[in-house]
Length: 206
Image (cartoon, rainbow, N blue to C red):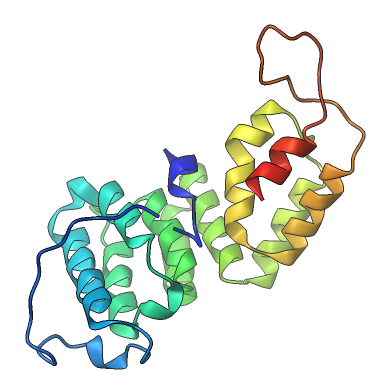
């Protein structure tokens, strides 16, 4: 589920919309950059309203938001996402990662202490903070990676999250793994014996 979600430019599934509002009737639309189409801004507004009104469809809604670029989200949009983040009935790992994409750093920092006893959730908050460019979280992640070996579990569970961070320091570490001579991954063909270098899978993910 998480791996499917992490196809950020983050982001690439298309919803079907029927929505019409008079220009200027929706607060927040005015602070979109000039390059953002009015139709796109309406779709974003509608999707974000849906996050609050129908949490059961959150994954589908977040996937639909993935087709938009960061510059297409206004401060008003980001405030709506913050409201979702701080709502314990709505917040999820996927929503946290989306907040990282939107660079909602302060809200993520506020959220962190509330989940200090939930290690998996806290890890996703930290990854989202790395995505925002937080130097301390980036350095912590980098140091932890130095202790990790690259194998099948790494490729399937951790690699998509590392690609999500979009941080040069993390990508540089991945590049060192590409040129490594270690052979810790199994071939894609289950009937083929032995181990292979994990470089191809890393390059494919990047």
